[in-house]
Image (cartoon, rainbow, N blue to C red; front, side, top):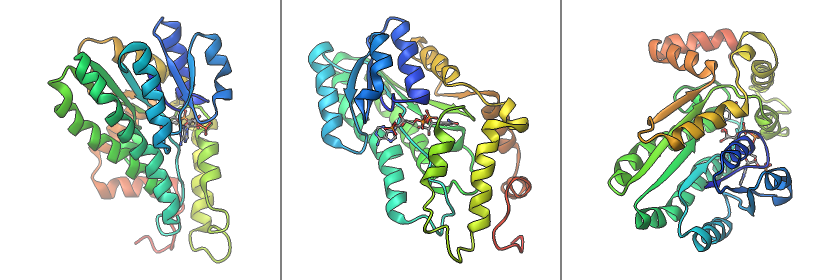
Length: 281
Ligand SMILES: NC(=O)c1ccc[n+]([C@@H]2O[C@H](COP(=O)([O-])OP(=O)(O)OC[C@H]3O[C@@H](n4cnc5c(N)ncnc54)[C@H](OP(=O)(O)O)[C@@H]3O)[C@@H](O)[C@H]2O)c1
């Protein structure tokens, strides 16, 4: 099993749970020194940066040499590039897509020949409830997760006949370093000066932290191991579902979004976020 982004959070929990369940796990990260704890659980530590093709090819080759092919790929590495659509520099938006979308897409391309040759395999994509609904200030992040959902739906059909399954995991709010990384992603220079979105962006960051720390939503958050348990379930099921929401926040907000017309969702968001411009459209 090859898991990306294991230096922390959800990826670390997935690698730990799979290794503890007795599977051979190749836990990967940009900085392999961050994998010492997982090595103690029996994981193989491999350097892999999802924006670096050579590192992905090398990791897949290591597994192919030892096991013939990758059996299960868990595309987990990712982060949120937060900020208003108008103010996020496009090089940051491209980096967001390189990590959250093109990384998983390329790694999937690299493992599929081996999976086809052995006649089985599973690609588990860690998407988000944010691949099914959007929050203001997360436009580029959501765009990557919607793209990952679309890619996974097409791929599931294309590779099903080769014995390969594709599963989307859609976590809600999960307590990890994710919100800190989202806060750090905001371009401080762009948010300074006479930025018309300054108050909005500050509000997005405050509410991102709040949903994990306190209030009603924080009670609906989950742990990284909640996600790991669902990944294990999807891997071991003979007929896994195409999508697994994780944590009460994912089930609640996905349900609300499905029921609400688009403008009703906008009105709901205006109760949670300061709307830039102030005219209310
Ligand atoms: N936490 C949530 O509420 C939540 C909800 C829905 C979905 N998710 C998804 O869950 C996944 C994991 O997030 P998390 O919550 O566990 O956040 P996290 O604790 O910040 O972990 C993110 C992981 O991704 C890695 N990563 C980032 N860029 C990378 C790159 N270029 N190559 C390889 N690894 C890279 C990070 O490695 P470094 O240590 O090297 O930065 C880290 O291991 C993400 O795809 C995220 O979108 C999270």
